[in-house]
Length: 409
Image (cartoon, rainbow, N blue to C red; front, side, top):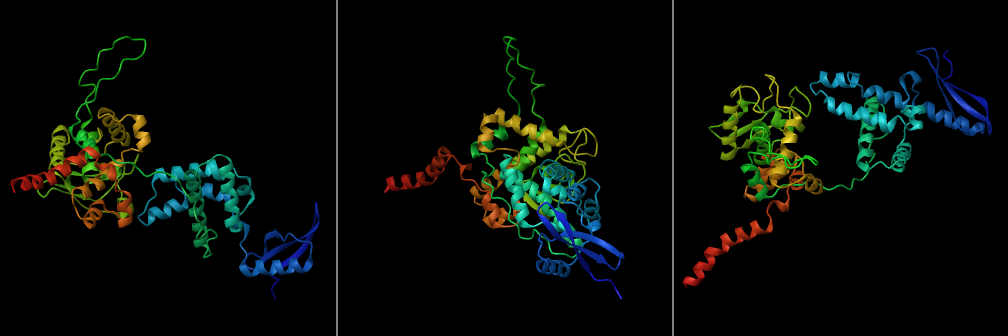
């Protein structure tokens, strides 16, 4: 006859006797877990012990402390990372790095996560943790990054044990952030015409300094084409890096987006959300691609935006720095970029807005941008793509002929 599933006992505490329960495992033939019932009343202790027993007992060996568990979970080469790779969906090293940083900076320092086990986590506890982060001066964006690292790890733990996720449906903190900015039509035209960079200013104390030679201030053609690929074809930064010459059909003027090389990585993978597809290429961009091939020692083989190392794509910083230098060249300095929230990804926002301005039907814009929903396409659309002077010219070109016809009458 088997032993009872649990037993009660008392312990002397600062506030008097407190009832505890310990649970027996028939498989392990030992007590596997002990918990306080937080009461000195025997009947209440019996009821609480029975409820815990009926919910199921998880041995402490299989129920680690939260801080220890998430630290191991977001380690490079962890079981979670290996399982993802095994199923053809490897995690980005950058994603693992960011999550591990969130654990180190925002999860481990909270003392309760050092002593609390995963099965004991509740939404109320997470609420207190987020308020603690807020009291530390952390913004909602930071809080949500840390929350995501915690939620993914806890959800994996629950699913692997066929238990209910204790944080299922938990809402993230509301982020009050501005959307990404976009360039105007005039600024896009200026980017197309931008081929060289202005001379660097003289440093203080050196008097008048001669401008650097044109060779030293020449714009990297790979960065230039990368910015135009995003502005005029809507490619993400990783998709620009992952674009190969066999994906560019110069006869039909179409680019097929097949893969992406995420920031600071070297190996290609499927584009974000699996958003492969075909994108029309304007003539000016085809011309720039042809010129880039003539400039490259590799010609039309391998990556379009090549690295000096054969078989590897251009570096992430080459594109980002190139974008910033082009912005400076057309009169958008760092302060203006911060105020307008302009980054390399803003070029993709510009593509969506420019496509809609060109009269392309929305369902096709969504297809070319490879967005999953019209809502996302709306998020990427910006009214400032056309400034008031440009709008006036368009109105003049429309009403001008009507005005002339009226005068002839």
